[in-house]
Length: 445
Image 1 (spheres, rainbow, N blue to C red):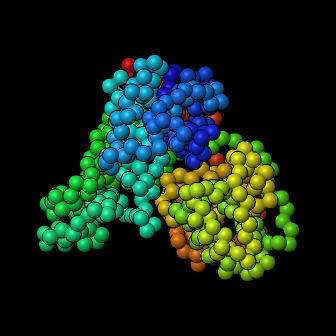
Image 2: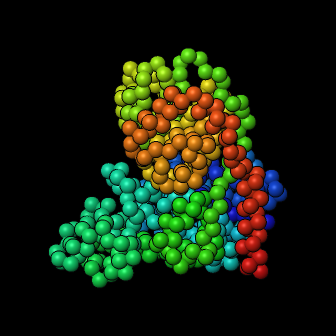
Image 3: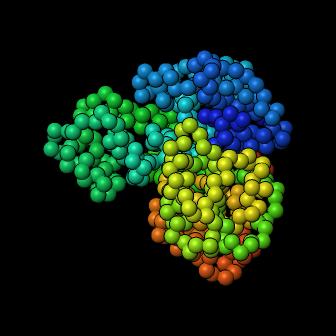
C-alpha cells in the first residue's frame, strides 16, 4: 500500500510529540513493506520561503516545504495557505498514494484535504490536539487561563485584540451570559444575538475559520482521536460527524532500559522530562516541591532551553534556587532509559487539557509511576493508585499532597511499580493502522 503522511514537522528538524509519532509510525509501516512518503513543513530562516526539498530520513522519503510564517498578509493564511498547493499536488501526482493520513496542519493548509479528495484519495485525519477548533491549539487564552471551548467562534473572537464592545444590548447580555448558559442554548441562539459586524473584519475570521474547518472535516473519510476525551469534545461541536470519529490510542516505540536503581538516603527522586513551556505547568511543580520536607526528596527537570522558552526557563531556575532541584538539560529519546535510570516518579503538571500524553506511557514503560494533572485525556492514562496519582490542575497544594504520599507511605512506590500496565507498542499500533487504511481503501473500491 502507498501511504502519504502529512505533518507539520518531522525529525531530525522537529522533535515534538506529533512529529515524533509521525516518524515512528511511518518507520513501522515501512518495516511492514508499505510505501510511505511524508509531506511536512519545516522552519529554516536560511531557506527561501515556501521552497521545497526532497530527502530521505531513516529510509523514508520526505518532502519538506519551508514556512517561516513571514508571509502572512491576513490571519486566514494560518489555516488556508495556497503556497502549499503546487508542491502538494506534485507529490499527489507523482506518488499516487492509496490513502492520505493527515496528522497535523499547523503551518500547512487545510486546503490540502480538498486537494487529496479531488485526486480520489481516501483521507484519514487524526485530531492530536485542538488546532481544528482553537487557533491557539491548546484551548488556553493569552493569559494561560483555560478556555471552555470556541463556542462556534465566539470565544475565539474574544481572544482577538480588535474585538469591539458591542452596542446592541441583546448582544452585550448574551456575551456576558454565555459562560452560564447551557451549551445547547448557546448553540441554537447565538445567531440571533451576535451580529458579525460588531467583530469587524479580523474578528469575523474566527467565525470563518470555524466554518472552514467544519467543511474540511466533512470531507474526511475517517477521523481518529487518541482518547475518548478528545472525541467527546469534538462531538459536542460536530455532532453530525460522530459516526466517523473513532477512538484509537497511540502506540509508543520501544524503550529498552532498566528499571530505576535503588535509592540512597536522599529520599524520593521526582522528575519531569519534555518541553519546558508554561502550558506544562512546571512553575506549579516547583511551587509544590519547595513546600516538601527538606532532605526527603529531590527533583530533576530534563528539557532544553530554547530562544522561545529562555525567559520561562530562567524564571524556573531562579524560583528553584536554593532547593534540591537540578536542571538536566536536553536529552535524546533513545537515551531516555539511561537518563531516567536514577529516578523514581515522573510528574506531569500540565495546565492545558493534554489529549493523550506519550510521556506518561514512556515513563510507565520504564517502571516510573506518574503524578499528573486531572485534566483532558490524562485520566485515561493514569489509573489512580495503580500506575500513578492525579491532582487538580494548577494546584500546588494538591500536587504536594500526591508527592507526600510517595514520601510518607511505605511500599506505595514498590506496589505501583509491580502493577505497572504495559503501554501499547508502535508495532501493535501500526498493525491497527494498516487495518484502518485497508478498510478505507476498500470502501473506495
